[in-house]
Length: 209
Image 1 (cartoon, rainbow, N blue to C red):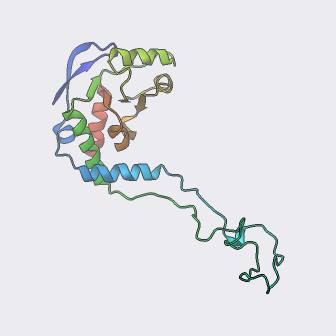
Image 2 (image 1 turned 135 degrees about the horizontal axis):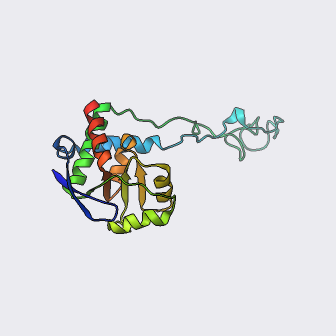
Image 3 (image 1 turned 90 degrees about the vertical axis):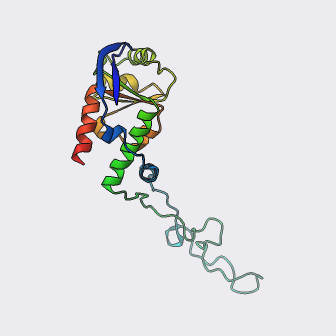
């Protein structure tokens, strides 16, 4: 599959890039995509939720009621879960939500996501570029030239610090590195913008798996 290479002004450079059918033209596996996205979203959860149990609550140990004659059950501690302000029974404890997904399944899921993007014509290839100064205005002009002003997009670049800072305040744009591109970023955007270097890097990454 051949894709025309554009520059940051949105003009054709006269070059084309061949997208490998082994990455952008496979038979998509929806279940692999589902497992990988689920694992990614689960890993984003902090898992720091915690409630105090009876032994952790700091309350008086003085017997609050007499043993008999109250008409209610005996209650020897104000730390009881049955009392307002007492500990919570079987409350949540800190734990991770990580889900294990095999390395080959992750690679298959990423290839499937890239295939969907390629089939729908949602992959744009641009020549390598950088922003001279960390100014949002400069990156916004790149979006305008590529007709991506209000489109949710992910730029996969070997970006320098200025480029990352310039895109940071744009709500519909995310800048990612080819080595760190994840399944969620691919599936959660409308347009995937790849630099020429990023195309080569992705091919190298998949060839090493």
